[in-house]
Image (cartoon, helix red, strand yellow):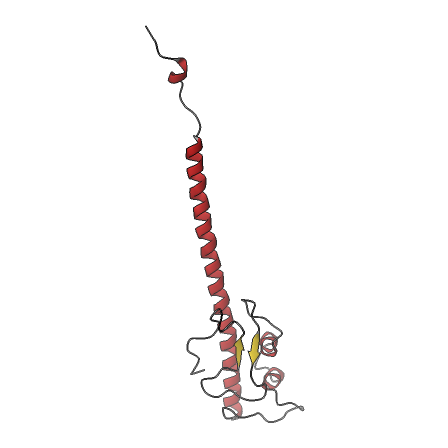
Length: 149
């Protein structure tokens, strides 16, 4: 004689509430880790882009300075009524319009900071940068080794 209940012999289908809760918690945890990783990657990419822009401008200024025989800390000769180094380099084709906009402060760095320069008409001394980023102190948008630039 069969005394088993028909409810017990039927196979169970679907997930329990506890199983669904665990799966959702694991997915949310993985998503959170993904977003934090993406944010860190974006921040690092912004810092790298900013430092590369500073480096390219610095190399252009040093090349212009060496090509025309100016000394560090010196001023360029007045050309077309200005001693602005950036204007001289842009007029002669040593920098792009994008680099000129960064030097002038009208182009922001990838992280949202602004580029600044101390003197428009003085070549930086050895160990100093021609332009810097406003995020240099808060988000480390400054080259680690810029002395030889």
